[in-house]
Length: 161
Ligand code: FES
Image 1 (cartoon, rainbow, N blue to C red):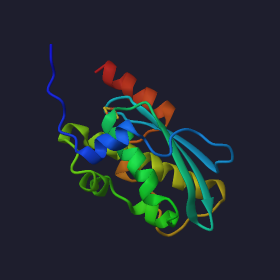
Image 2: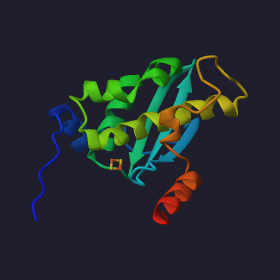
Image 3: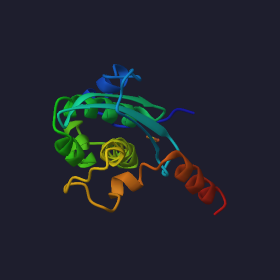
């Protein structure tokens, strides 16, 4: 049975086929692993910070083309930028920059953004710091980039519904 390919832009396809900043590296300050309750796919970000800015950000994704493409683009977009700016990149911005994600793939971009926010939150939490621009409550994106145990729980819940 043939399936109609999803309408991905050339720029997204390029990031999917040639992902930038792929794989772990020694000396990361934070390793944040998160999964999407929508599809069960996982992503990991490796983050190194210098002077409050992203010194190095790499990723591994077990997700789809949209997730790999948005994560790859995100690593390039925030490289060298202050963590506050990286925190504020929305999945909508990623989608727009990448020519628009198909609706059924919104959650894949949300997973990339939420996992990066989790990494940034964890960076400050581990240092006992709480910048004013990080809300006390998890963002919607963070909630949609669940930690492994939470993800296992929510997928099990779905299975038994
Ligand atoms: Fe799971 Fe895209 S379908 S990340």
